[in-house]
Each structure stands twice: as C-alpha cells, then as structure tokens.
Amino acid sequence: SEDLHHVSPNSISYDVIIDNKFYSDYGRLYAWEGANSACPVEWHLPSDEEFKELEMHLGMSQEEADQIAHERGASQDIGTQLKEGGASGFNAELNGSAAHGYLGFLEFTGFGEYAYYWTSTSGEEDVPYNRILNKDSPGVSRTDWILGTTYLSVRCLKDE
Image 1 (tube, rainbow, N blue to C red):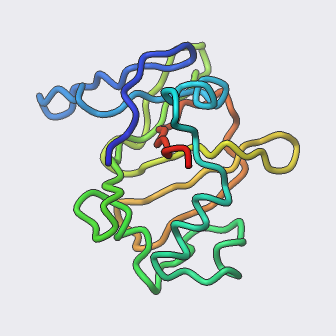
Image 2: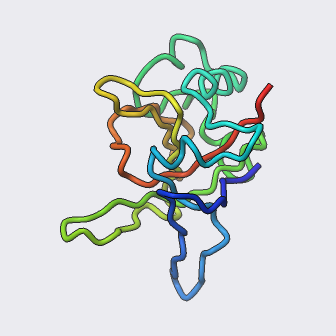
C-alpha cells in the first residue's frame, strides 16, 4: 500500500530536495478538511477505531490501543511493522508534515524522520486523532493535538 497521491483541495505536493535528491514520488499531504474528502469513490479515510483494529491485529492490546500516548505497541514492534519494509505491508513513508510557519510560509518538517496520518475521527475540542511513526522508534503514537490546518499523509481504506 502507499500514501494517497490524489490532487484535491487542501492538499499539497511534497516536492523536496534533500542531499541533491528530488523527492516528488511521495504521497501528497492534506489538511484534515481535505483529507476527509480526498479518498476516491468506494474508499474512505480510516476512523480512529479502524486504525486501532489494525494495531490490535498486529499485536497491540485493546487497553494500549485506546491510550492517547507516544510509543504504543513498542514491545510488539507495531511501528516497525507499519513502516516501509515492515511485515504488515502498510509501508509507511516517512514524509513528515507541513504547516504554515510564523510568516505564513509553508514549512515542511520531519522528512525521513516521521510519518503522520490523519484519521476521520475528532477527539476532544474537534482536534482530529492521528498516528505518528518515528524512524527511531518501534512504537506508534496516537495523538489528538495536531491541528487540522497542518498537512499530514492520508491512507484510504476500501469500503466494505
């Protein structure tokens, strides 16, 4: 599987040059509003519950899956399984995120270090749940503190 590349409103291309290598093949990044409408017909943005189902399928307990915490599932290598080359087939690309900085310019951060994914579910105060994978960690973080105006990756799930 791969990150979504669909051009839609509230999405940006991750065209970046690092160490003289051009990275344009990575998926687009989406503001949460755009993420909720970016998936093609018969596909949808996974809910927080659907992400938890995947994490539990890979060995995480229900109790740990329900936590809003960093490094969940580290003892079972859930994050490692979800990253590129991992046993799950999810193959998360560590393409970071983007947000409008102090002067309003779009700033890309975390390329090669982190993968951030939206869910379709809002947490407290209408802040969406998301998942974070860290290059140096075997776990996966579940948070609800990244604002919907930040640009993160999207994975679409086939409708049943």
